[in-house]
Amino acid sequence: MPVPRVHVFFLSGLALLTSVGSVLHAQVSAEEARKRELFLRARETIAPEPVATPRPEPVRPKPRPRPTAPPASTVEKPPEPLVLPPPKPAATPRQMPAPRSTPKPPPTPRPEPPPLVLPPPSEEKTRTAPLPTPEETPKEIKLPPPREPATPTPPPRGSERESGAPAAPIVVEKSGQAEDEGLAPPPKRERRGLFGWGGGPSYRYLSRSVRDAIDRAPVKRGRWQYVIVHNSGTRQGNARIFANYHRNVRKMKNGLAYHFVIGNGTSSGDGEIEIGPRWTRQINGGHVASDYLNNIGIGICFVGDFNRDIPTRAQLAALEELITYLRKRVGRSKGRVLVVKAHREINPKPTDCPGNRFPYRWLHRTF
Image (cartoon, rainbow, N blue to C red):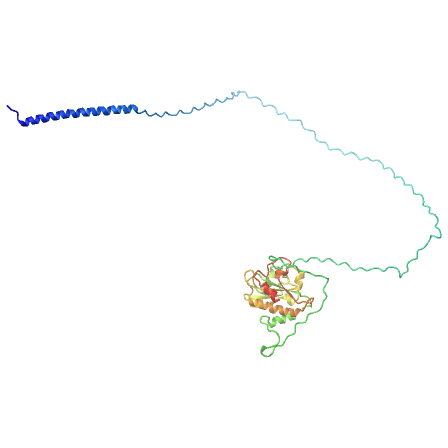
């Protein structure tokens, strides 16, 4: 019986697949063998990695055995006896040798010198000097008594503060007690015309009562030589307040240290002139560190602290009127009028009064 064509084709395809499978299997096995051979060759060429060996621990030296003390014997030795040095004998007081009482030998008498025998004087050589007559006797010379040296006068208690600019040199002349020249007459009053026109000068700050008080004071001729200008160092005050401070705090028995005070409008009027008892009684001031200058210097104090402020225009105008009138009242001393100085320009000790902002140029130019 003939085989159908379908079966023939099936069998031929199966044989073909078998042969192809065997070929592929042979190729795969050959490929695996080749890869295995290459792997083994590469494994042989690869060097084995070095294995890290652990570091050996340092060998520490064994401690040497310390020598052990021999065991103490159980039997204690008796303590050795303490031998003290023998006591030193006490020092006996040193005996002073007894004074030797030997009799002094009597002084031997000195032989007297032989008498001097002079030859008899000859009559030709003997001359008698005539005695001086009463007219020829020298008269006694009377010398003047020695002058006492001038001693420096200490500064008065309660003088103004002593710090600031250096003082100008002052020549102090002392030639004994000054002669009393009598009292200086007050200046003549000049009558003013009708309605106040004409006549003498007009005063704005020097009132009539102040001028009368200045004139009533018993002013000696030639006593006052200086006018010394001060500042109070305070922004407020008047003559009464300063007098209380000087008397009770500074312990000045005559009270107010100045002769005149010019207000600044706080505790008294601006430019108001106040007279102190030192002027009315004509006694020395207490405003300068020198008794001599206090006796010949008139002290005028501005109310104010001129290290911070400046004097008002009214104060300066009042000072100008006051000094002009005082020059007429006291007259000239040694042929010159009153010399006007600031405190620091005449004080023997350094001071900043009347302050760094005081108008010194105006003072020197005006007076």
